Length: 115
Length: 115
Image (cartoon, rainbow over all chains, first blue to last red; front, top):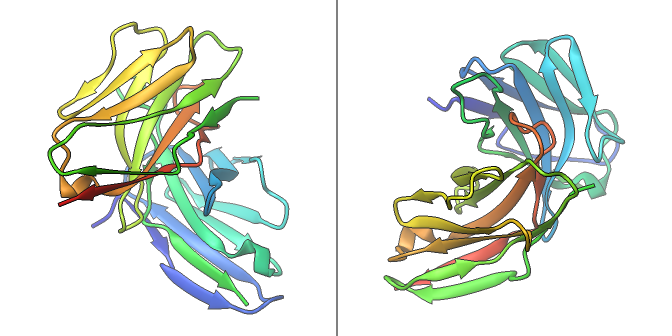
């Protein structure tokens, strides 16, 4: 089983609909992230969370919200989806603890298409 | 703000040959972390190699090595004895913090290994 699991893997929706992308992890990491990938732009940080009570905006948070329901779960919501939110979304985790590598561990991505 | 530039959108090389992917970055920080991530067609992001700026020795992981030039702010990835499984998008990334809460990515290089 994957350490970082994203659902759904693919989703097509219509403009104005509310969408939630979910992420769960079994790595025991405190830090979780949501990134967006667009062709030719690399990955951009949407939100990140250091623990359940800590939520921070990234570079491109407008139009998105997040919820850290538990240490292992971090969900991303689009309250009213628009076509330019069509992208590949990645959840990731990391740990700053001594002995860890500090690298990001990614899920397999959620491809969202907004028509 | 940090920036990461990958000037080669696409590259191709024959199987078993050596290829070098370029990455430059801009920062005023003295200590930081640099990464190369691989994104195969399965789309999951996988860490290839990491370099800590305070370490002068270039990082090596099997067939993958880096040429880290701190003064020039350059961080290139060399893949030796390239294999078909190396076909992927490669992203250079930068972070000033261990634990990567603000990882900045380049726009990627699409590498194709030709049989």
